[in-house]
Image (cartoon, rainbow, N blue to C red; front, side, top):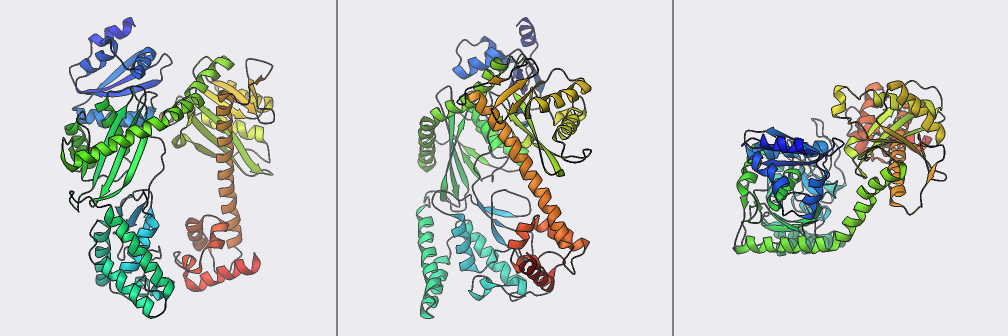
Length: 601
């Protein structure tokens, strides 16, 4: 503590980021400050602290800081360090359910409309869609009203045969060269205006089609039009009349009980309420800092709106500056005191408060299953360190063919999927799981102490799927590499026994023990990850082998088919038009491939 007191005296009057460390050197909190000296000293001098902040401060053994040019730079750096270290007391957005968008491939000559959940460059996105309006229905409505294509068929100089969508008047068949690029472009622009919130003449178009289908006694198509008209009216009811029709707005509200917190977001696109999202969060920040940190992480993966509405305690200028510097976007960040935006903010606050009330028990249960389970594991097994980063390894093969290994990572008892790794076994002949484990661990340990340790941080605990034999095999690798500060255990599946290097007898825990359940989740995840990788490469090898038997499919075409379909099952299920669309295949060869599978398989 004396060392910390001396460091506090040296803190500068400058903006920057501070990093709190525990006694094991783990990063437990990252924060940003307008003035480092004032902000960091508050943790150690202020007598009034929330329960979460007090718990964090009690774990601080050291800290360091990084000076930045401005507080905006500090917020950006804070966000990067949170992603890197995943500190225990920061807001961490987990892999959450992603809501769908309608994607328009505007970089293509004849843009296609499709459903997407990830945002990528080169396309324009509309959404997200949630809360009663299905994106599939929206895509069908656009397809029906404007006749734009919803397929991924490559359009080249040679016209193709029109598909069913053309014959039921849902696509203008640009692939068959039955519409000019200019006319198709006008349809695309009209469809995008509709997706942006302008209804235009969509209702009139659908009614005309419905009447036309009814007159020609195509009653199923007429009924489909009627259903789309009903959906159109449902979308219209979501319009917020006091907001501009061309405005995309996110309304963000934060609520906390000083231990746990929740964020509620209302998503408005083109003046229409698309739906709401809620997040449970835990952090040791004050409310304004928590919202800024949340937004920095949230918009790394989400569509950035024109406007963000927040509460009065939020740092609006800081957040605006962050959007401008990080994304080159002039986003208006408002803290309204009255009007429709204030009413929407109150709605978001209510959503967040209700959600927090419902999920508190789930949060506590999750803590028991994760952080508390890690603490108990340390006590039960007598581990020298808290096992914050745990890695588990498994091997998968059939009769020694296509041998693979997996490494999965849990941090504080929860999966960190971005750190998972796969291994192709290179040196082992036949089905020797012990030797395969030794190879995988040797390659893993070789990264320690190198530049790659930045991406492959040293684990506190390594878990092996297996019993004493597997544990002894891996122990040899650890001794050969001179690694002694990483704990090593194995978990045998039959009796769920835990073997360690410190005791002859195994450790057996009650099947209901959260500590054992966490180890089982870790082991099962390693097994799943290994099996998935094995099946993938085994299926690709099988597909390559099969394709060599088909006349006309040479090396380049095999490669194109592999890149497009990946496995033999996907190729067998594919339509002839999908196969024909692969570069270099064409309709004639696609027919040969389909016939081969029908006759031979």
